[in-house]
Image 1 (cartoon, rainbow, N blue to C red):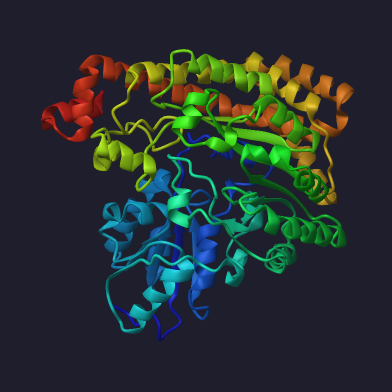
Image 2: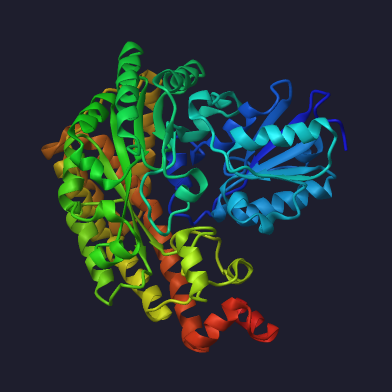
Length: 548
């Protein structure tokens, strides 16, 4: 192998693709605004900043453009990272790189959680890169050809590097992420964040966050910046000075950005934080609501959601200028036949347009996975990968364990919620409800060129929406209603109408895939299906199951 440390090494960083049918992968909507993908690959940009800076870097995001043979021929070493949903793409990159005789380094959340799945990689770098990449580089200096690196240590976020944002074209993305903290203080049974990053949130300083914003500003990015923290309010005391610093920096620079983030729903009770977020121009927030049933929240150890009225919380956040996106999960042991209807009703009453409807998945090394293993209910991971008839995704993939409630019933409940929530009439009623409570506090004002691009995007988006007879009349009626009732929120209304073009297709695809799986369970019987997924049946049945 080439001496990678002693020369200007050509390092190829690869982000594998997400499923085109993913809830989050709204590429057609991105194209309307001249972008190619929703979010930039912050993990790889951070890794690049942690590697020797005399190396030559090339980043290929396969969500933006294909990985070519020329890219692989150029490289001296290939680095790939990703999440569970990118598993197939990561494995394919390993194989292609090896066909070109290139060593492969793999890391990231999925490789950390289940390293055995990526045993073909030459180097496996687990955990937080700030801790384990130096171990990898020390071996490279010795010309070692293979290695596995992990550590129980946590990174000191106050020493974190500024990501290499210069390796991407900002206009390829709707938003670019920055990270304030790692870790979450809560103890949700199904969550792998607390396993990967711990329950004591570690934070960057206000100066670090401002430095990252300054870097993005100098590169010419304007518009949407996402705080990618899994819970922005994990450390409320440290967040206040950061928000104050961002607010002040934004004001000094004529508000070049607006923001989004993810936080637990009890943020709605933090008036000081909400006011600061309003002044800083936070417009979207993702919250994990998970279930309308208290028993399911208790089972999931999601105690922070109990006694927080969801409808009231969503409206409080809207009053501070933030639209709520929310995650919901079906498949908890304590659910009943009424849970699906309760869930659809809650989404509608709260006016949550962007509702991610997922099925419970026991992610590797989580408390849930450990409990299901003790109960002999967890399926073999290789079976889940091998027999999945679609790309791995939150909506269509999950229930990787023997369920308490009949599996086909849960699958059809998921179909029911998808069809109710993403019915066109129902969605547009929800859109109006969202806008009726929204009090925008726009600080960011787009420049002249951005206004022209926005006008062109509006025309293209309107043409796309009205080309569907199911939504054409609903769209114009809703747009007129917004202009009369809350004209300041017209941008948000148009955005929510545009993204429905994605949700409509994604929900139809997911409903079809789930119905197929439910029919498969009906055909073989639940016990036989569970045995198949545990790997206990003959290969002939396995092949028949995969083909059905």
